[in-house]
Length: 108
Picture 1 (cartoon, helix red, strand yellow):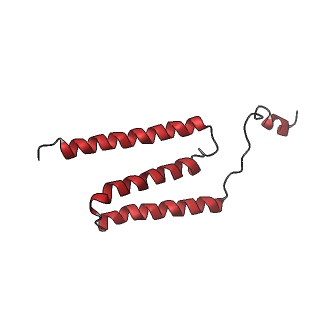
Picture 2: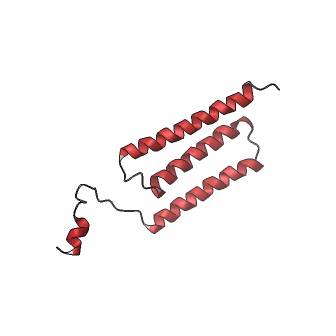
C-alpha cells in the first residue's frame, strides 16, 4: 500500500473544496480592519441613539465573517453553522435583556 493510498483512505466521504488564496484572506483581514476602525470611530463621532444598533450590526457582521472564513464554516456541515448562529442569537438576546434592565428597571 503506497502512502498516497493510505492518506486518501477513509476520506472518501468528505467533499473536497478549494481553500481561499492568501490574497483572499488579506482582503478579508482588510475588511475586518475597516469595520473595526468604524467601531472605534463611533467613540469620536456622536451618533446619538443609533450608537448601539450600529455597533451591534458591525459586531454581527464581523462575527459572521470570522466564523465563515477563518473558522471555515463555509466548508463544514450546516450543523456547525447552526450552533454558531444560535450562539450569536443567544449572546445578543442576553445583551439586550441586560440593556433593558439597566435602562428601564434602575432607580434613576
